[in-house]
Amino acid sequence: MAKDEVQQHLDKGRYGSPRINPEEQRKYLGTFRERCFVSMTVSEMRSKQDQKNLIEEIKQHPDGKLLINGAVSEELQRTFIGLASKNAADFTIVNDATVESEESIGLLLVTDYAVNEETIDIEAKYPPKSEDEEEPKEKKSFFSRFFD
Image 1 (spheres, one colour):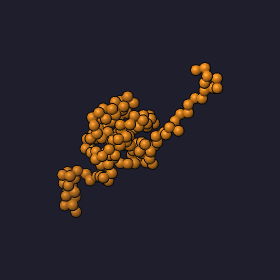
Image 2 (cartoon, rainbow, N blue to C red):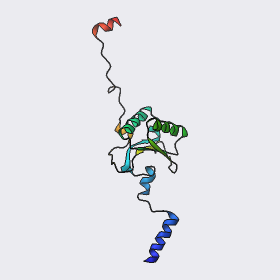
Image 3 (cartoon, rainbow, N blue to C red):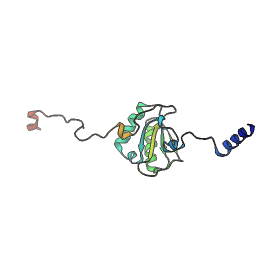
Image 4 (cartoon, rainbow, N blue to C red):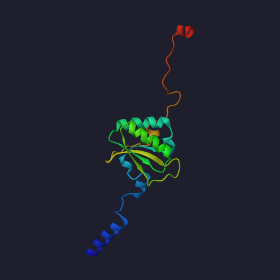
């Protein structure tokens, strides 16, 4: 028994502690899916509307923290660092993350405990408005049409 414990201790020192769900942690920038409020892909990070929606999420979850994928362009990183600073949000750049495609996760708003949000994709939470759903235009009166 003592040899097994010694071997486990040596293995932990050599290889580090075993990780729970390493694939999930790799996908979600080192955290678990259950801790995420909202996620953005690299392509969604470029959308101004999605950036505005992220600000709304930051305001709703002031204890949240932004995880920024370190493999995205420096321009995008600067944009979201500035956004986090303006909205008093903590952020971390995750350098061991990768970007395989435009659909890879580029940013997460997370917390240290499980929140179990059903939907975390920003475009699923805030579907884009079609032109029919946009704010209705103010109707002009009959006479104002002639005299404007």
